Structure formats: C-alpha cells, structure tokens
Amino acid sequence: SQQGEEDPQALSIQEGENATMNCSYKTSINNLQWYRQNSGRGLVHLILIRSNEREKHSGRLRVTLDTSKKSSSLLITASRAADTASYFCATVVDTGGFKTIFGAGTRLFVKA
Amino acid sequence: GAGVSQSPRYKVAKRGQDVALRCDPISGHVSLFWYQQALGQGPEFLTYFQNEAQLDKSGLPSDRFFAERPEGSVSTLKIQRTQQEDSAVYLCASSFGVAGELFFGEGSRLTVL
Image (cartoon, rainbow over all chains, first blue to last red; front, top):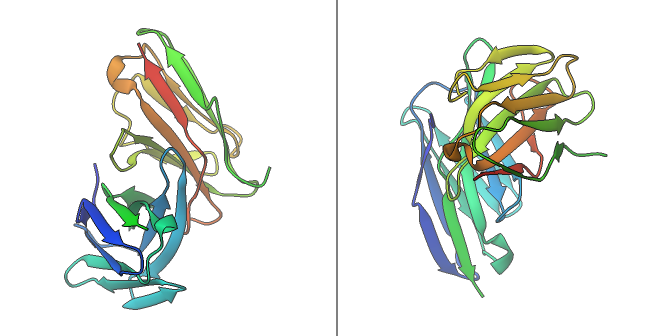
C-alpha cells in the first residue's frame, strides 16, 4: 500500500523555470522525506522535514509541510536539465517501529 | 564498499523457480528495508528490520516471500515458486537510525519468464 499521493503525475518544464510537486498523505507522520530517482537507479535522499516543522530549504530545494492538511510540497527553483528524474515523497509512520512508505511519484522532465 | 550493495543486479528465473536476493547494508546501519518497484511506479513497502528483528512484514505479497537478517547486517529476500507478477525491481535500503534518511542500493531486477 502507498500512503502518499503525488501531484502532478508528470511535469514538463523549460530549463530555468521552477517546478512544484505536491504530496498528500493519510495518517499521522513522524517526518516526511523527498527522494529523487534517475531512470534505472536507486533512490537518493533529498530532504527531510519533521512533523513539527513547516518549511525547510536545501540549496535550490524548498519543502513545506502542512500537517493539518496532511500535505507537503517540493519546489525546485531555477531547474536544470540534470533535474530530470522521478521525485517521490515518503512518510515515516510509527507502527511500533518506524516504517517509511513511498508515494507513486512525479516524473519531471526539464527541457534544455 | 561505502554504500548499500545488492546482488544480483539482474536475475532471470523460470516460473516456479526459487530466487534469493541479497542486500549488504552500510556497516552499522540499524534499519533495513525491502521495497518492490514496478516499472513507472513508486517503491512498494515489503518489510523492514531493526537489527535482526523483523518489525513489519505486512507488505509481503504472499507466503512465497520471505526475508531474513539473522545477524543484523546482511539481509536476504527469498521468493519461492516465482510467478510472472513477481517481475519487478527489488530495492533494499538501510538507515543509521530508526526514522531517518534511507540509503538505497541500485536494486535487483527480477524477470520471471
């Protein structure tokens, strides 16, 4: 089962534009993370935001979290062709241990 | 090596064969996760371990799937009597703590003919 749902499923933009991806989830979380996956490769961690945080920045990445709406967004500013990849949100939930569940992802294509 | 290592990278099995997929996590990492990823989809949770304890196996699709981590480091995912629907990439990830960043291997791509 997947707890997170990303929106949009696919996004195509020009280099230099900003890309925004959204994630909604269903249950209470410990934290929320975003990952990137290049075609045929493993996932790479981008950023983690805790449930008591509202916004976090890392380089060209900005993540927001709204626990009342059970949603998060990932903003990539000044996108580059190299940002072309799939992006996944992952929620960490306490089920007696901590379980990380991924959404279906947003496929981002940045045109040079 | 410094990262999570999975083997084999590619496995072709005939329907009905048993397969074993290995994961070597980063040394000292407490948590270890297995995911199944179909083409164009997100990783689906299968199971996870904290040290040698399997804390959650709710994502295993059937009793043909079995995972172990007997000494709290290397883990093996075993699939018995493989079916075509088992074809997917199996991802392993480890984490130093219990709720933090996951480090992924490159995955094992299983094709069942």
